[in-house]
Image (cartoon, rainbow, N blue to C red; front, side):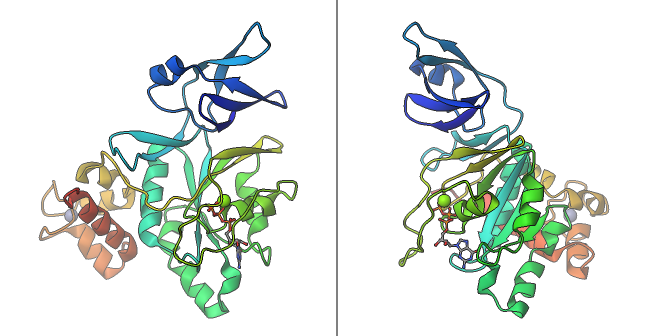
Length: 298
Ligand SMILES: Nc1nc2c(ncn2[C@@H]2O[C@H](COP(=O)(O)OP(=O)(O)OP(=O)(O)O)[C@@H](O)[C@H]2O)c(=O)[nH]1
Ligand SMILES: [Mg+2]
Ligand SMILES: [Zn+2]
């Protein structure tokens, strides 16, 4: 299993041992997409005692995002993960629902389960806290676990541990939300560098490469660098609908059977969102994503 990927080499974990492995350039070309942390690989031993990567096995699940410079390329963030925890924080940086919607879609595409961790809840007064957590109710309604947590008070850490136990899990989210801090809290043997908050915006990233940590008991946690923008690619209005499964039953009552649930009259989805039968917050998320998709690229 790949622990980390460098240029021309990667670090592997096998039978409780870690070692370095050479990645031949022709393999990178043949595989067409980069290697990722969590990949299962086949290696061959060389005469000089070093090890070389021979093949990457088919991925069970993946988490990827479009390359910021070339949206047609996908960049793998992690492979073979069971669950992806999207970490957001209530302050510094604040909660961004738009980013949550994008992550959930990317996670669903890749086949892993999703969970949301709202970190730094120690920074909120009790009433603010209740309001922030309630704003995520639409996700709970979709069976996405939402865990409020704080590494200062220790709240939510046991709940997170239960979510990841015996599984391979990636923590993703903006820089500075506390991904590395949470990993350290989940296992005190880990001693991952964490960052001070940046004074001007979110310029600096503390974690610069994805790394897999073995917690024992078949629990593997992947720390990832913070990302600023999380784009969507090759998504059309038709496929966007697939990521809002709760719209499909009410959608059968729309006046037009190819209803996009946007400007059409007689749209049952919009009506039920307005009446509160469907989550209006989720409907708004759908409208925002649809707008993003139809906005001219530039
Ligand atoms: N008050 C408070 N601060 C926290 C909490 N969790 C993390 N922090 C602080 O937030 C800052 C950033 O934490 P990191 O763990 O480095 O964040 P990260 O998400 O790994 O950031 P990148 O590696 O840049 O993506 C540090 O100063 C932490 O001490 C929390 O629960 N409460
Ligand atoms: Mg980090
Ligand atoms: Zn409709």
